[in-house]
Image 1 (cartoon, chains in turn yellow, blue):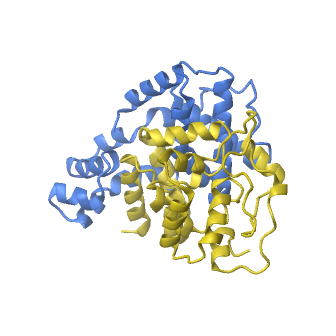
Image 2: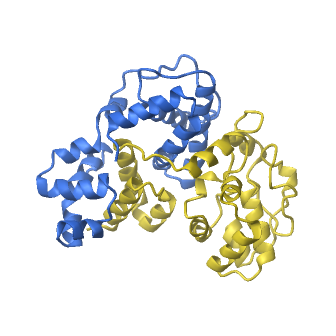
Image 3: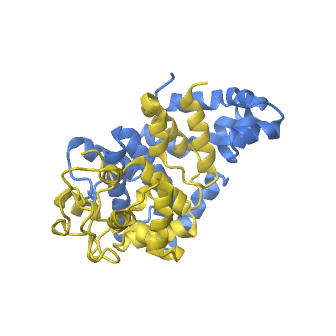
Length: 200
Length: 175
């Protein structure tokens, strides 16, 4: 049986169980067959009733509609301290430099860091930390004034991060962060930079 | 797993109660998958999905309640329109035009509103139906399904073949 069929069966069963499997990671595993897997998954999701979301998922969605980054809302709801999450993440990613990791994580959680270049290993590790996929919840859906958060991000361009400059108020931004708050990426990237910024 | 009609009924109650965050949380995986599939890009797919979610929110805020239409069909149509805007280079986060008619007769929309995997599974021979029900409708992994059915993983994989084939036919990909 083709690998794409096995991946599909695995994902479909997890979805029906309400586990929110992360499609992007399955597509990465499918390699050249990613488009075929995406078509199969899409058809499946259109033809089965969607599982009920968990209380956490509903709370995170509500926060995103109110202008708050979802990952921050999830951590707050779980009652986990920032340093506790960073320690957990450091262990899973085998990163020694916790100070810089903390800054990157804060940027990601605060909606300052462009999530697109973030490595699959980080998403997988965060899934382990929180027990659920956090990839789709990074950015708020609406601004606090009710506008489109994506429109804001498009207008300001993708944010890249400088590990030396954590966001000043990532905890509860009134709006998606202003691009002026974001420093340029480091000229030379080490492994930790590449995990969060990509290869550039 | 709930039946389609029960799920639709629950959605209608959620909408009537104003619990849009619950509905959006429920349908986010469906929207993301459709957008990734259509754009062939995880990045673009996630971004367009955000716009779909925002548009659904705006429709709700504008008082739209679609009393005669299952919410999953509303989700499907708003996703379709937003993807059309994306491919046409138009803004994908602006309010939907007032003259867009939700529930308009479109064969593709009928597929979504009428065809359910359970019905496909019910038409399979019994030996295949049992495996498909356990994996695709009850959420057992193929290994677990093999144990329940007293057979091998490989055998379960083969029994799932026809359900996947039907899904492939739905996507126009019979390969």
